Length: 216
Image (cartoon, rainbow, N blue to C red; front, side, top):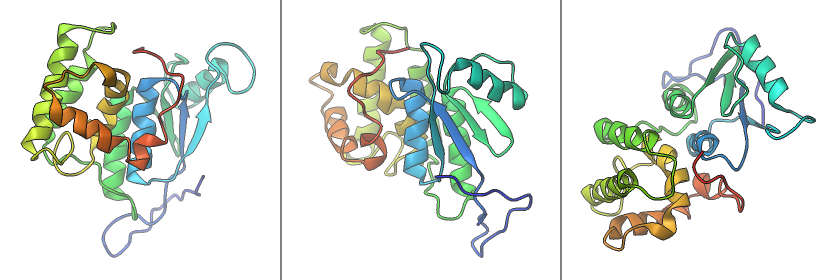
C-alpha cells in the first residue's frame, strides 16, 4: 500500500496535508519493538508499506539491505529493526517512530490522531516500559502493570492508557502487556478488562502473531 509523494504538499480546507508521504516500515513480525510501530501505523490509518527483514541469514530483504537503507538515509548502519522511511527521511528507535507517527497523524488528511489526552501519563508509562529489565518477572514490571491499571482506572475503567482515545501510550505498551498478559496481577482488574478490549481493536489484533520474541 504505497502512495506517491510530492515535493509540495497540498493542504485541505482543514489545514491537513492531502498528499500522503511514502512510508515504508522495515520490521519483523515477532519483535515487540517493531510491533509498536506497526500498531501505531494501523491505528492512525496512515498508508504504509511493510517490509519484513530476514534477521537470521541472507536472502530476501536481510540485514545487509537494511544497512543500505540506513546509509542512504544518513544514518550509521546498524541493521536492526524497526526502521522507517518517510519519503527521503530515515529514522529508527521504536518510541521515536511512534511519536513521529503521532505527529503525522495530526498533519495528514484522513489520519486518526494518536496524540494522548494526558501527555504526562503517556510519557511516564512509556518511560517505565522502555527501562524494564530484560527478564520475565521483575519489580519494575510489577510497578508498570499497577501504574497501567491506575491509568485506566483514572478514565473510569473504560478508556485507554492516557485518556479516552487510543494513543502513543497504547501503541508502545501493548506489545509488552501482551507478552505478560497471563501474569497480570489479580488485583489489576482494570488492566485485565483493558486487554480484553484491546484484543478487539483491529489495529492491535492484526499485529499479534503466534511466535513472538519474549522481550528483546
